[in-house]
Length: 84
Length: 313
Image (cartoon, rainbow over all chains, first blue to last red):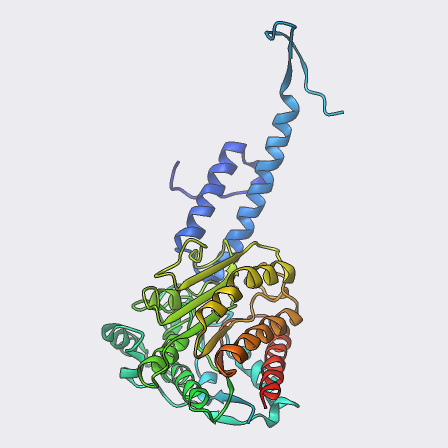
């Protein structure tokens, strides 16, 4: 992971970028290197990054195909994952 | 005999750079509360200045010298991105530390059952060798050391309900078995410390609270962690780092304490003090940056202290 801050609009980050940015935020908050005045803004960015990661994961889940197993336990086919 | 209020004009002369949240308006707000009924009739004392030797009970001598030499003749000296000194900050910091010394003398000596130090700069982030988080000297630690070393108090407890972890107080008393330190605070948030596994010599009790949590979670933490430890420790004096920035309106944190939550936690601490140490409680102002929230929470805190003292009489 790069030490370069990952900033910019959260909506435009990929899941991997958002997760890396969230890890940076957590590291900064836990490391005690963030000024008191800025820690609340950093926490709120971390919260927004977490929500973005959750949304991206939700999108990915919908794309997962359900594996259909036959009588012998082996996979025989896949069907689209259906949440309905 | 009621709640002794300690103040000093120098608290108004500690001026931070424009836009800084730890501003003179905070102490002006507290003073307006104290000037109105029923608080205007509380006994008052002017806080003395703490000496180098008194401050040196909680900080290294070299650190005290560093702070003294950092005071600028004009403008500001920036000790870290949050922490600044103006030409009058050293005087204010000496009196803020001295207020705790006078308060413990008044309460341990029996002149008063409880005291509240309405002073700034705040102190609980200041470590043995480091100024941070708006804090220069750790006022409550200096008062606690005075109680132990000069007044002969055998053991005491410090409860810190500021929304930020009291890392400085924890640092100073990390291996001091005569002092129990308990802190509730939002986590994650500045300064990053205060996890439950930080226990010192078995004398440190941290109760981190989740962002957006409110009075219910706070009460569970105090009833589950802080109060059992406090009763078991059975201190001879209880001191409170009273920060009011867990208030829902505060701009520097995300906890949702209501005004009555500050009254509840104060009253419960006092109930334990009444059982274990003849009711002796010394409290000091730490944070609290929304002026309306600060005023209402200070009133709730004082109301609980006054009711406590009246119940003892």
